[in-house]
Structure formats: C-alpha cells, structure tokens
Length: 322
Image 1 (cartoon, rainbow, N blue to C red):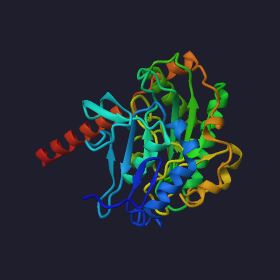
Image 2 (spheres, rainbow, N blue to C red):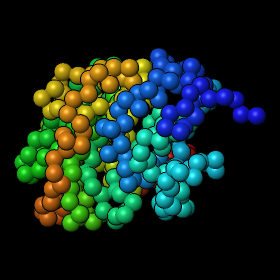
Image 3 (spheres, rainbow, N blue to C red):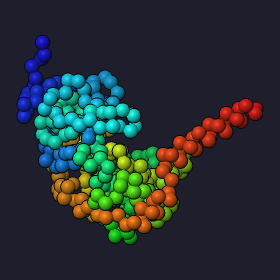
C-alpha cells in the first residue's frame, strides 16, 4: 500500500519532502520543489515544446541522466518519440509544458533540466547558438570564464550579432545567441565554431578552442559543441553541485560582479529580475560568410576522436617495437 503523500500540489502527490536532496546540497527535496514552483513562470518558457532530459539523484545513488520517460510516468505528462543520435534509438522524451509536469519531475528528484536547442515541431532547426565557457580547474577560475564570455560578446558585436548570458550553475558561463530558422542545423553548428574561433583569437592567452583538456594549458575552453541535437542546462535549472546552485541569467553589466554560489535554490527566488526570455535578443539571421568560415573549421569532437585513435596506434606500435 502506497504511503500517504506529505502534501499535494496541482494534483501531484509530493513525498519524502524532508529528505536531503543530495550530498553537499545544503537543501532538502522540499527546497527543490519549492524552488521549482517559485520560478516556474520564468523557467517553463525555456522548457516548453522541447524534448527534455533530466538528471535525477536518488538517496544513496549516483546522479543519472534520464531521457526515456519511465513506465510509471502519468498519462498527463506530454511525451514525444524522437530518434536520439547519441544512443542510436528512438527515445520517448518528456516535454515539460506546465507546472504540473514540473512538480512531478521535482518529486522524482529531477534536479537538473536539459532541454534541446530545437523544438519538437522543428527538429531540423535550432533556435539558439550556445557558446559554453568552461574555465580550467581551480577555485577562482569563474572570473576567467567571465572574461572569455566578454570575448564572445566582442566577437558577436563585430559580426552585428547579439547574445545574452547566464551562469551555467557549475563553474562556467553560457552565451546564447537566438537565431531565425533560415540556417540548417549544420550551418548553425558551423557558425558556432566560427564564433568560438574568433573569440579565442581575440585573446589567445586567455581562451582556446582545444577540445582535449591536456591541450588547453590553463586557458578557458570556448566550447562550440553545444549544437545540433545537444542539450544545454535550462535557465533557472538547479545543478547537482555543492550548495544546490542554479543556472541564472545575468545582465552583461553585472557579470563581473557575481559568482556561481550567489545563485542557489535558497537565494535565487529573491534575486529574480528581468526574465531570461526578455533578456534574449530577437532571433537573428546568421551572416553567410560566418557560416562559410565555420564550415572550414573541423568539428572538435571528430578531431579529438581521430587524435585519440592516432595516439593509441602510436603507443601500440611503440610497444611492439620495444
């Protein structure tokens, strides 16, 4: 017999609300659900109409990413079947369009929310380019990611483009560039590579596009691989990080004054200002020469894969010759 829920909201039974959320969260499951409920009107626009992957964390277990909805998913949760290239199979994704679904996910201990860059009705087009600024390891490196984000902003400005910025909720920064539907997924990915390369070129002592960590030499990685079928953590989404930080929109003028720990499930609701949806510029048309430039730049993951194979072959040959 099922135990009685602690409470019910919008028809969703909520259970075990007093449990710790995860090790180091400094928050309970109730804190998570209260937070999601508080920011729902700001968070839902970034989730609606998009296939959703979530990262859940059960008591005593490691976090895991969930793409396929579980068999016990309520029938009122909207789902869409789509081909997942990474796993080479059809996946039944949830689409989080409303409060009820968001609360249900919270009760499933879904902490992180990672929507696709495309909408379900246009899987052949992304709505944004995303530059992910990933700083090197260290306690004070967020400031480096901020400086790299400013390089991206400069590169965009030189192209006549504009973007909005948010903390990743972890250690980095995301720059979003809304685009119209004139560019294919491949062309949008190419433009992202070109913007990353232009940004790193402005200050090569600070930023790099090197995909392999060992080749970054303490620089910020301007990651252009958030493209195509990739997902990116949603604005306002909590993260499974110490203190239960959240990915939070920040105005460009304020970016150099904040740290990731400023925004947690406890503090973020009191810091809400201009909604992310209103900070995003209107969709922009990508310059054809930018796309052409990006098409001359190899895809980072592919380059890294070939380099990894080359190194393995070289090591194997060296061992055979020894």
